[in-house]
Amino acid sequence: MEKDLFSEVQQRTQLAFSNQIEMLVFTLSDNQMYAINVFKIIEVLECPSKVTKLPYAHAAVKGTIDFRGKAVIVIDVSDFLGLVPQDFKNKLSYIIVCEYSTNMQGLLINMPDTLITKSWSDIKSPNAVLNNNGYLTAITYNDKNEMIQLLDIEKMLVEIQGIETKLAEPIKADLDHLELCTHHVLVVDDSKAARIMIEAVLKQLGFTYESFDSAYEALKALDNDPEAERRYCMIICDIEMPGMDGFTFTRMLKTSQKLKDTYILLHSSMSNPTNETKASQAGANGFIAKFQPDVLAKKIVDVLTGKEG
Image (tube, rainbow, N blue to C red; front, side, top):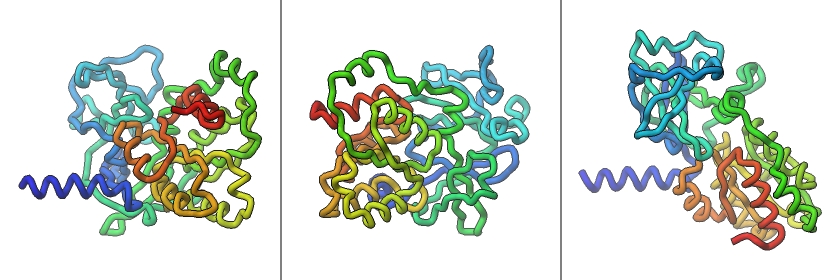
């Protein structure tokens, strides 16, 4: 049994280096299938009877629960998406306690279903028809050819909790005395909310940039650009992306004679410290959690002025 458990742990750890993702599939009030990366999950539990309401909260925030001595907000994903709200008071419901960008949230769902492992190459970006609500980031299929939807949880959290993109005054004051890189920054992230935040930071720092929502498209552009090595002083890249994940993208760039010395900063909502280790093992030069504009700005300035570390 110990050997089997060890093998399972090893297999899951190696997913980060094989362009694969393990997902928990679950249903919402519409009984359709959705999924979330297991690396973001802390625990799945039955929704407790006591959910403490919060005044003036977003309509999809049903309140808070006590989780290991901490107050964690509970977000009804169905309600947020405009579906029938989850009837957690009268029906057995579940909460996925997860961590996005150093913060814990509870996602209220109908029912957890199963764990599946998929290659990122089997996970596709949705077309305009499927993504008319703006919250669908990718789709894939199970063995029965049933569609599984991956939601843009990052965008959902930004809309519920808000985010301040204006940099702190001390950081902006420091910029007055710095000669920053005059080249472009390349941004790769399938989440529109994340790209908007990164671009806002870069604009305030005075950088020009180019953004891609696909690692494949970014890689193609870099391969076709004979000046890429001199054009880009830094690449800021997400980890979870349809088609090709950030770990694979990083490894491919680090084996390129043209781009191997370009600084790659992995920027992910998977903020668990183990992901920082995986980022380093994949060859990334740095790793920070998403949706922290001041932290991102300081990281960029430190790297490009030689102050990092």
